[in-house]
Amino acid sequence: MWTLYVGIFIALVWILDYFLLDRRQYQLVKKLNSAPRLPLIGQAWVVAGTKPNQMYELCIKLYEKYNQKFPNILCTYIGNKLEIGLSNYKYVERILTSTKFNAKSSLYSFLGDVLGNGLLFSSNQKWFERRRIITPTFHFKILSQFFEVFQKQSQNLCNELEDVADGRTFDITPYINMTVLKSLCETAMGCEINEKDYSYLNAVKELSYHVATSFLTPWHRIKFIFNLTPTKRAQDKCAKIIHDFTTKLIEERRKLLIKSGESQDLTDLDNDEIGLKRKMCLLDVLLQSTSNGKPLTNDDIREEVDTFTFAGHDTTTIATCFTLYMISKHVDVQQKLNNEIEEILGKDEVTFKSLSEFKYLDMVIKETLRLYPPVPIISRRLHEEDDFGDFVAPGNANYNIALFALLKDSTIFERPDEFIPERFMGNISPFGFIPFSAGQRNCIGQKFAMINIKTTIINILRNFEIIPGFIEPKIEFHITLKSNGSFIALQKKIK
Ligand code: HEM
Ligand SMILES: *[C@@H]1O[C@H](CO)[C@@H](O)[C@H](O)[C@H]1NC(C)=O
Ligand SMILES: *[C@@H]1O[C@H](CO)[C@@H](O)[C@H](O)[C@H]1NC(C)=O
Image (tube, rainbow, N blue to C red; front, top):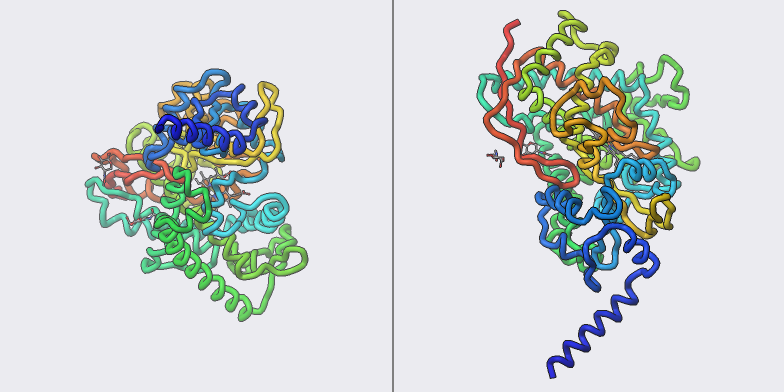
């Protein structure tokens, strides 16, 4: 009797699978690389049970195992949803330069639900409009004001670091993460933040953990089931903390703007006066902008401001911490950096103008971003299929670009695992080195981030000798690259 039941069960699964699977898409997938697919669950079995901290190893393992027909591209069905992982230079360029791939992958909706559809998550017309509004915030003249904030915060940081600069190993992450957050708040929202706002930082951090968990849990993709999970409850708690924090700031700033009474015209950026009268910040730009003739609402603004702090703070923290970590490990690199500082600055303070002369420092940061990309994966959605030449890319699929793998591609970077800043003196293929992504949806904060990181590193190097710590970091892989710390030691320099 039971054989009959089993038989009926198998038939049912088979029939259901037949109706749920997109046949055309599956035909295309079969021509590409993939692991064996089971009815209904697809290849979910290869990712099920993976913790966020194991994702890095899993990606590399899958790549090695199933990469037969085309290099560095792999299809996986999670249920009947198609995910395509890739890190092939040629295909990455194709995706990042094609307008067909403007939309972010459906995976981002986990975040979008919490943060709102700010610049990072929106697509099409809304994205285009917002990008137009926000771009002036990163104008050269405004960046030069932001530099003043970075400089002030770096100097505060150096004062704080004196307490721990006794040659003993410590974790510098909490120092850097507060400095970055303070700089971000002041430049994005025009306010100074203090220690008691740690809860905001922690909410942002916890949120990325929950979202990474959902990426890897197939049934979280079914909304009504997800809404019943503890992850959803925890995520909502973080969201509330984040929303309350930003909403308060927006309301304060609106009041301040009304009180000060003057409204600056941002459209005329060639005007030397711009931003010089009063410190400009992202929030002011947004408060004074219009979309289709209407001013942005508090919710529109909150969505952009939250996206900003979310996109800016973790990434910059990781980049700064790992640059310090790499400098601590390479005595020769530190010596060259010190020489560069001496040559360019002598006894003077660093200025916005002199920052662009730090060519070696620039290479050191780039090489760190290559080995420790703060954003290891980016993801796009393709709605309708697209002919790549070598194969037809299936539609209705997420395309997950493994930046961490691309940045270690040995056909682009010789001896890819080694730390060699000088490699950036040569020509690197434009789509080979893309820690900030590329194309029209590249990182809008790239210059902002580089200026911030450089200012911090220069100030630390002027005050301290950086010594290797005794503890190696453990690297994890949430939405951003995570590590359990950045362990270095400092010794105060005698001036
Ligand atoms: C080292 C630091 C940083 C790295 C490595 C980095 C990396 C990236 C990457 C890879 C993307 C593309 C994401 C995707 O396609 O899904 C991106 C987008 C973005 N980044 Fe950054 N980022 C950094 C710092 C910042 C900072 C400081 C800000 C804000 C001040 C920022 C704001 C944004 C925004 C708003 C987007 C979305 C742009 C759009 O879609 O139009 N980022 N970033
Ligand atoms: C910043 O550092 C503090 C202190 O170590 C830590 O508790 C917090 O989780 C860190 N936040 C982020 C976002 O990394
Ligand atoms: C971080 O992880 C490394 C490697 O597993 C370990 O040796 C170290 O003790 C950890 N450090 C902390 C502070 O947890």
